[in-house]
Amino acid sequence: MPQDPETRPTILIVEDIVFIRMMAEDYFEGAGFRTLSAGSAADAIALLETDPTIRYLFADIHLPDGEDGQKLAEIARKRWPPVKIILTSADMPADQVRLPIRGLFVPKPYSLDQVRKTFETMT
Image (cartoon, one colour):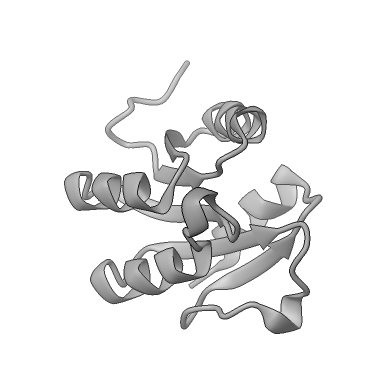
């Protein structure tokens, strides 16, 4: 039986590559999450501003038009401190990623199972 959308945890997926974003949406929906998605940092901030149920942010570092997932994560940490944040990138070494406090980095290619388990263990 599907969970009531109001009780499922909400994850915001920020990825400019539509196919990758859709795969993540499908996976997290199937794993019991309510998903929201954005293709840019500006769209993600708009969603964070209007939806107080967002508890997880999974964002690519490299976004279109020079937007930066690291900056998005910094803004999210300051304005929405309880949100759990994971950043990802295919071409940025982990030691060069600027993470907010309590944020984590998962390199691409990643396992969505591992991303989910990582979110579940974050405090």
